[in-house]
Structures are given as structure tokens and as C-alpha cells.
Length: 230
Length: 254
Image (tube, rainbow over all chains, first blue to last red; front, top):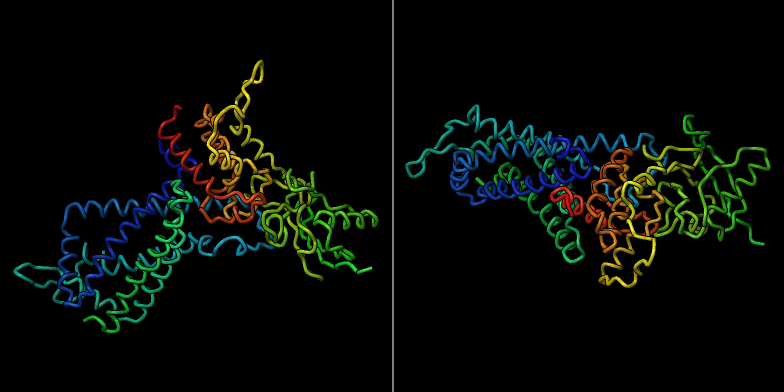
């Protein structure tokens, strides 16, 4: 069973594409909810949505699926990486790779590793605190309309007080931009969606997505650090 | 008479599959800009033979761009700097006077070096034998292929895929060492035609299986292969192979 599902080169590609598209849909949700901080209402809207995401049963179940999808994407990617290295044991003395492909399409494993390093810090900053250890900020909870909410917005402000954290987050977003720029359209090609009729539409959507989502994400630490939103 | 070009060649020399090879430098002079790349190597070999040295071994056959035998990695690119041509159709006018030119064999786990610039591309033959054919009745009154109606667009696409000469430039160029452009072209040319329907599903399954066994890498849609393919075959064929493979797994019978 496992051999049939992951054994062949093409099956590995399909899993890479499916998990990639799944992670892309996660980015949309994550970005939309975090962008609530731009209402600039002291984090009220954002905290309410964060509360919903943290307590809703469907979302919490999807969180497990998300981690599984991420692990599959990483493991599959590493298997592909090492297999591909074995496919050319003797390197060229002179290789003009830039003549026929983009550097970022050749560097997906490197970009993925950079994103993973960022993700470890990011999970430590927010996921670990909301799910396990509790927030660092005092008081950790606030009340609106008789409901008690975790003050994740204040935690964000607290985390993004340090310039180095802001820089690491922005670099993480830049890595994500390059990774998506190849990954988005690549996923559709792997699943067999490549017809002249809609090829340019997928390419345009991929480019737009790669620019818009990481830009919004990168704007958050910057906005909080500079005091653009309070 | 106009004086020819002077070039510095850095050529991979390797005695046989098991021995270590290395880059050896050879100056060549009086090269006509109208010579093909292979003719330039012929000139070099003549001078090597005259000096009692071993000539550079390289693959070639038709020298008109249709057989797929020539296989050099020239200045970091399969079949050299030009597009849509094989090495034999590359002319010395594409190079500058005094230029240093690196000439290497295809590099792939599945293409062992036989000698110097010659590699064993038997892996492609074995992939073909795994399913790159159609079974047609050749005895008695056979059906004329032209009597079978085929949509013009399908016929064109099948033909585009069938222009693959199996030279191996795709696998040699791919940063992942993947041969998927070749395999996908062979899968596509039959998948699009009525004659290919009988073995359609087992063809894609068997050819992909053989491709993996040969030790080629995995496609990550970098797209270098379609740029370097001397027949300009598009990675659209790889997307078709992906669909064919997925369908063959979902519903194995025809």
C-alpha cells in the first residue's frame, strides 16, 4: 500500500502537489485572520477570530491535518531531493543552469529549509504559547462584551518589539515568496493541469498569490514594530 | 585566404566506464566558422592522430539533426548554446574567436560513460521496450493508418511528441537528472492516437516503472528540459503523462 502510494516518482510528485495546494489554502485562511489586526481596533476583531480558531472543533481537527500535511510535504520533499542528487553522481565541470531555468525553481529544497527554520521560531512564538504554555504578556486575557479572550494581539506586539525578530519574519516571508513563485504553478503541472487554454491564468494566479500573501504577512511585524498599528 | 578561428577546448577524457576521467585542454586553430561543431572535433582528432595520440571518442551518426546520436554538453548546455538544434547542427560561428569551450558527456546515473564523450543510453531503449510501442497486426490486409479519422489537433500534438529523437538532452540538462520529458513524449504520442488506446494504461505504468528503475531523478517542473530539447518538445507532455498515470492508477482497466 505505502509502496503504491509513494513508491513511484510520479506518486511522489502528486503528493508534493496535493500537500502544497493544501498548505496554500491554509496560508489564505491564516493571512485573512491575521490581517484583522489592520482594523487597528486594539486587536479586538483579531482576538475574537483567534479565539474562534483556537476553540472551534473543526478548526482544531484541521490543525492536526495541517501538521500531517506539512510533515508529508517535508518528508516527500527530502526524499525527492536525495533521490535527485543520486541521479547525477558526477557533476558537470561547467554548468550554465541559468540559461534554461530560474534559480528559485532549482532551489526549492533550500527555500523550504529556510521556511522551516522560520516556522520553528514562529511556532515557538505563537503556537506553543497559545496551545501549551500560555501567553507571556500580563494580563494574558481580556474581556469584551462579557466574554473572556486570550490577548494574542498584545502577545504579537510583545514579540515584534525586537528588531531581529521582525527581520527574521520578513526574511521568512521573502523565502515563502520565492517558494510559492515556483511551487504554485508547479503543483498544477504535477497534477496534470497544463493546457494552453488556462496555462496563463494559472501562471498569473500563482504570481499574484506569491506576491500578495507574503507581502501581507511581512507587513504585520513591520506595522507592529513601527507602531503603524497600535 | 581568411584565417580561421583559434579556440581552447576543455574536453572530458575517460578511458572507459570504470576508470576516472578528467578534463584535458586542447588548443585548436584554423577552425572555419562554417564548420559544424562535430567537424571541428574531427579536425582536432586528425591532429591528435597525426601526433600519435588517442582521438576523442564521441557519438554521431546522421549529422543532420534527426538521429539523436550526438550528445555533447557544450559550455554548460546540452547541444551547446543554440536552441532547437542538436550538436551536429551547431556551427562554429556561434562561438567567439579565442573562446574557451568546455565539452563534457551527458551526466546521469542512468547514462554511464563508455569512453570520453560517449555515454550508454541503453536506459532509454529499455524504457521504450517497457511500453513505447503499439501492437498492430501486420499480417494479411492491414488497415491503412490514413483511413482512421483523427482530429487535426490530436494528430499535430501526437506528431510534436513523436519528434523526440531520444538524444537524452532532457535528462542531461535536468538539475534533477530526470528523464520525464523523454518518457512523457513517448507516452503522449501514443495516448493521443487511436492505435495507442489498447495498451494505453499499461504503457504509462510500465514506462514510468522502468524509468524509476533506471535511476533517473524526479521532475520538479523546473522546465530546463523543454528549453534545451533540440526538438522543442513542451513540458505539456509531462502534464499529459501525469494525467495518464493518475488515471491508470485510479482505473487500471481500459
